Length: 403
Ligand SMILES: Cc1ncc(COP(=O)(O)O)c(C=O)c1O
Image 1 (cartoon, helix red, strand yellow):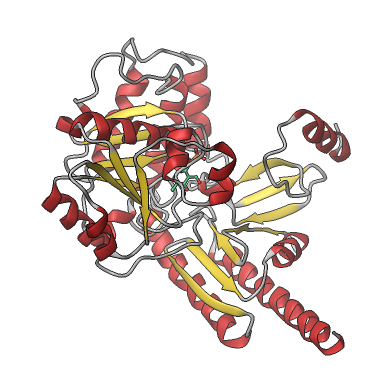
Image 2 (cartoon, rainbow, N blue to C red):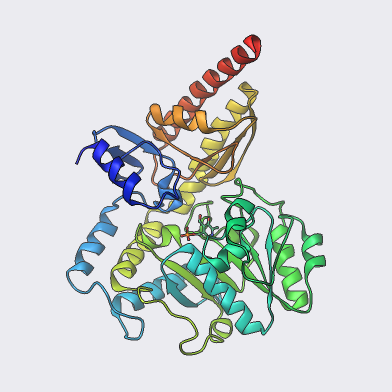
């Protein structure tokens, strides 16, 4: 199939719910992607934050090969060695006390389970989420997601959800009632625009939850697995939630969602109250175990901290030089550049120059590269940003001069 044929089939046969880039990707290695014509790209999108250990990491590939020759599917109602190995590895890296997991297939599912768990364990109904939050698009997760454009076409959503301003502990405290089961929070908001809350915020969320006997759910679907320079972003504040949601990178590139909680919390779900056919299948578990090994042995969280600091410094220099840049923010290799205008042009120009980046809202360029990206690749990205921002500024100046 050639480029045109691939695009045509997806446009005709696939639900039209993704804003497609004009790109047919056929191969990946580390932080590099190739299109169907052999053109090379630096990947700063990482499949929306999935490719933390890099594309086709040899250890993950080997684990998938081996497991696929042994056993691919095995329902959760039977024991399996690959699944047990993953669970053991997982609790080595999760915060102390979070050691009983439900395995599913996506971030939204990890959140769904957390919501059910919170209601079941507490016997209460309400969940307080944050303005700007993104937790996925299934009905429960969508009820916690903030953006109207995702919610409004599907009303009514699940009752019992309310939203308070992100980063504001007072409003959170005021919103709690005797029927509040959980507070659901992203340590850094990803889709909401790479929003880093004020220092101490997560500690205050924890305090309010303790004081009012409310469960704290941390959605680490995007921030987890080394992305922010710690294995989990909650570690920056030394906060341990009661329930943590993981997905994206944890499967080494395969679909895996994880809801992990304290024993006493997870044990409130009784036989048959929650399940999913594919959750924790041997193939995904083998890939996830390999990905955890890579995360630890290649010290990817430390790498994210070092490379992220370097890249942010380079981007901050651009902010000083380009008036269209309003702010550079982020932690580790989860970085946003807020501009004064829509970023669509910037993203398209970056792509034309061989760099794939993301948006996060209308005016934010977001970088979620694999943590194995090289310093040289990040420098190339910074140089391209410089060029593209200069072009954008020139065009806008010309536009306003003639307009
Ligand atoms: C914080 C957060 N939670 C949940 C989700 C939903 O994950 P999925 O798309 O795998 O359902 C996302 C996806 O971007 C996310 O960033």
